[in-house]
Image (cartoon, rainbow, N blue to C red; front, side, top):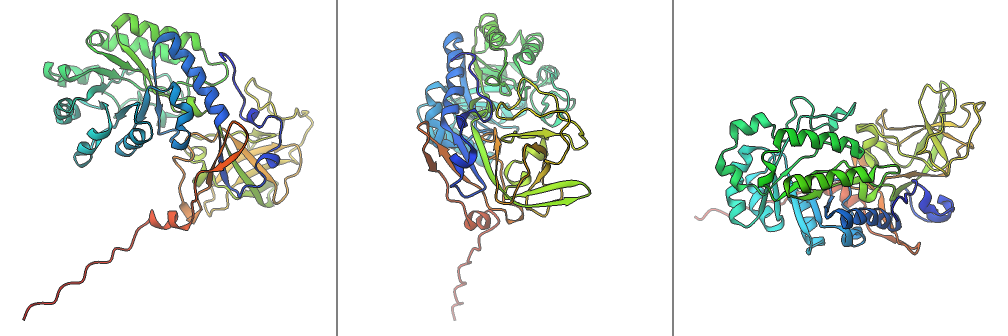
Length: 436
């Protein structure tokens, strides 16, 4: 298993999207259990060799019908608040529930204590406010630290170590606000600084943690290294990751937790869509699909992110030549010559009224036609948990593709989901008549 990875469309096993998903109403998501298990097994091997404990960051993947596939390799779930904590508790009751939130609300905290076993605070003030009652309830407590060592270029929106970040406690803040009584409340420290990065970035971050908080860590029971570890991506440096884990264990005597989201479900999901119309404007061919970037794959606009498309290559809008091949290229994509023109380049966009509802420009090996199925890969993550009904767009149904190849529909979304998230008419009780 070690070193075995699958490209975004390898799970199709040589069959076409039409063969596999042609009978499904589009747009729809399909989650592939086989790839989920392969990802989880790789993480499980690392845990067996190092003794680290893996958590599932539900903010990236929270399709709980598939949790049983991951359960054998999970220590527990990571939540960003009350609802995710409750979801982890209810669906994996035998596992740990960890929660971190930038700031907790008083009206939520008593309920949170029912579900979470490990509670991480963002600041000394929050630790002082909620820590004593959480400790009295028998919970393990942590504080998120900010090692102030950024390892990202671009995508500042995902950089917790950016100047002025609200996330995590710096050493200067620690010196000003952490009292001996507050330190005694702590069972562990937590840092989360990575986003889709390799273990070299973790190594740099861990050095900064050692410099800033190495004197504190021997007093802790555990260290949570957060998420953003792209462990199941082809080419990820697993031996370096394991060295980082062992360093922390040996240096500070702590149990090491890691809480990736993407690594569990990387390349384990598809979004199937069909072409509704093809238009041309100023030399640009627009293929209008029944799926939407803004509604069904928000990271396309937020990051931005270009999902892979079956038998197509993403290209820059100004590109006049075929992009060079890369190690991560879609193996299902046929090679093209540099003499190819842009006759089969299409700007894929959604049917909404948002002008910027554009997924990107893609080069196909044939002209697109109305009704054709277009399959996007690597959309199990940050899709079903972030989608929305802007413009009255229906939520795509979610299907599970079992390891035997059969398909099971997991949802039945419709008009009700659109309407009830916007309001519900509450009938006020009638005012009783005045007594005479």
